[in-house]
Image (cartoon, rainbow, N blue to C red):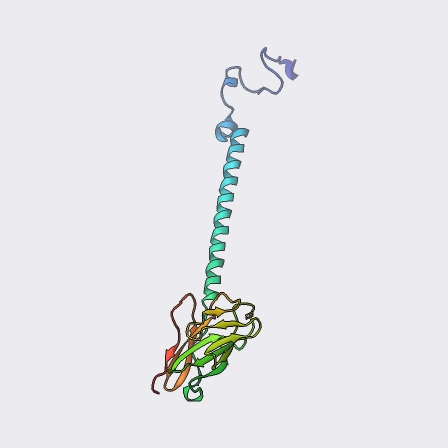
Length: 198
Ligand code: FES
């Protein structure tokens, strides 16, 4: 018995919609028509949204990684700017000239080879980073730390533990002055210049 003398129709159970008729119970309530999602559907939607979120997050991460890689590539491609090094007349054939390039923290060596060719390299040995020197009597660049030897034309290692060539610096003679143009990156071609008349 309900307040007001109403009685519970047969067939009703606790929790049923007490405001509708028996026929209405077969239909969806108004709130369900306006918000037609079941809890299971909501779960599916939540899963779908979470998947979208994961995809979006991975996309952002991938773009960020690609951006970082591109930035790192640009950084490694920063090979220094062209600048004058020394008057060519100050570096006789068969001798070397030490300078710093591309920064003041980077020791470098210019070698004026017999025959007039110029070659410039980083002085940093590619084995463990000791400083290489020019040995004119041996016609070679030599690292005293572990007796590494490099070819003065190509910078390639020819003896000892180093297995990579010295970093090459491209050069050019302009009006009798040797210029460093930049540290060569990924180019195996010789990077020196032949002596040109001033
Ligand atoms: S550091 Fe140059 S040979 Fe080892």
